[in-house]
Image (cartoon, rainbow, N blue to C red; front, top):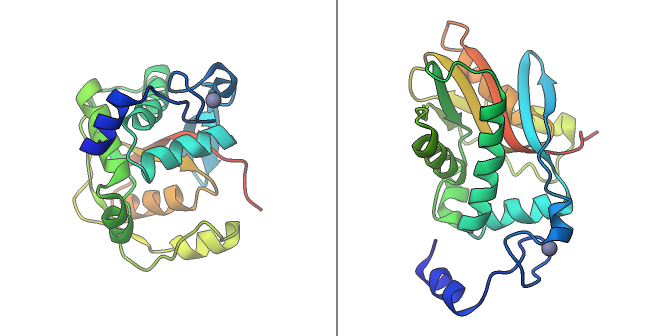
Length: 210
Ligand SMILES: [Zn+2]
């Protein structure tokens, strides 16, 4: 967190990340849009476990973490991801957490690599190692205005390997929308010649795009 934000939190009391009312991190009204649940999405052989429906409140929490570097929003996303880790019957000894890479431009704009940051904090709390083995090739454009088909096309060949991956791999991302990014990450992981065992956890899950 930036020093200015730290100081402002001492002077001003906390506000709800969903509606900006004076309250704890999420007020009781907004907490109905941030309920933990077991959502499963299957993407061509890849099973994706998600915790929270991508509601308007969830969207604001993700923006607060991603674009404003809010540590309370980070914490909510970490909790959502770790909740799935606890619920799933993984053999935690073999698992490696693989963060989905961010573009160089967004790392520059945000002053950090958002998902890697969150995954490293989860690793510190759970003892599960991070395997930061993926990188973006730089061919993609911003996906926010693309439909499902365009996103799949945009992500084709967009991720490459920068380190060898072993063990049971668990891809981590903030939200699954079309699954194009996770699908491409799994393809890159498998491209190294042996078929790794791969699944994924995302904090949030959006309604499928058409
Ligand atoms: Zn609220």
